[in-house]
Image (cartoon, rainbow, N blue to C red; front, side, top):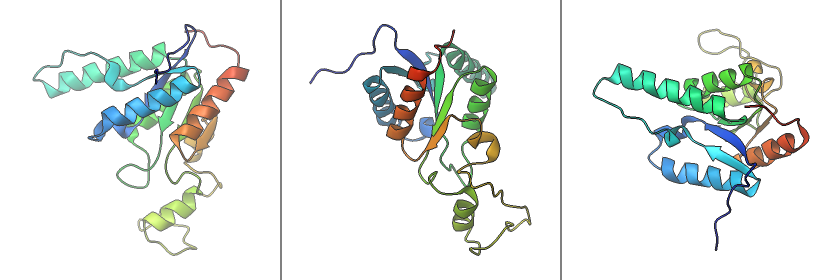
Length: 183
């Protein structure tokens, strides 16, 4: 079966998320890129950057940061995996990438397992709090706006979905009806 190829005018989409940290990241990115291609989008992962990394961890971190920021700048939109990562919140690097993209006027669609659920309900379950708890163990109020994520993320995104496939479809639909971005 032939592999779908991006059209010459395929819209470039940065694939943000903690997927880089998982051992199956090649499969994860292949699946995301294939889903993008099915909708006429071309997915670009942080791992597409070709970097000459050395022995200095700090220099490597700066090189990765610069390359990812540059790649986001070259893309027209962002598909962000904002599901819970190492706790009740999304990956901090992904959150930065979403904010960076939003600041550049790029549309962002988020996805993640459990994001069909209200944020407060999800936090209560994950922290094993009472079903009516309004504060966590540190007595910090648990946000309650009926959104799937913190309001700054949920309101910034065009849409928040439960699966990557739903997010790709939502982003493609949005991009078909929105004015074409300038790179």
